[in-house]
Image (cartoon, rainbow, N blue to C red; front, side, top):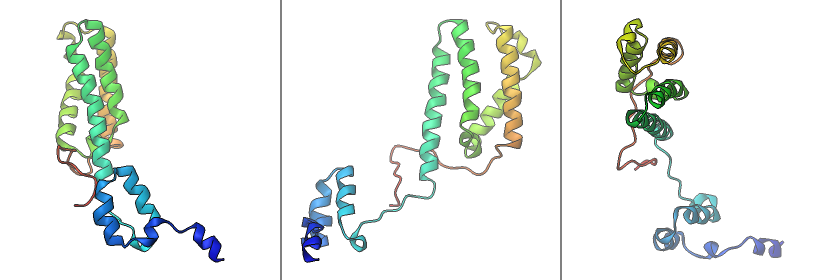
Length: 170
């Protein structure tokens, strides 16, 4: 039995945990630190919990980056056809990220205002928008407003990821 136990021994079993934490861990990259932490006995492992909304904040950041890139592409489009297609793509993409309108009141207000503007039948005064795009925008925006009222109610405000953001409890 002693020979079997010897197979499971490693260098970390022979070092004091203070030495491992303060002398070795600072020089390891993230993945190496995770691996080294798993080599420690369960009682000696470092456990740093995630903040409550960290995953939601990160997801919202990724979703807002996706929507923002579409908006910038639409703004910079050279032809009316490309601009119209990107407008439709934006409104087809927004329902894929309901967290943006459920956890950000400012974004929700802007989206509601824009969707009401685009679902207005007087949109025909806008030049450079094809009749098909107007019809589709109206349908997409009305559907989105309905889904906001029924399926995606506002829950609460969650801060977006910023420069000094960290997922772990400090």
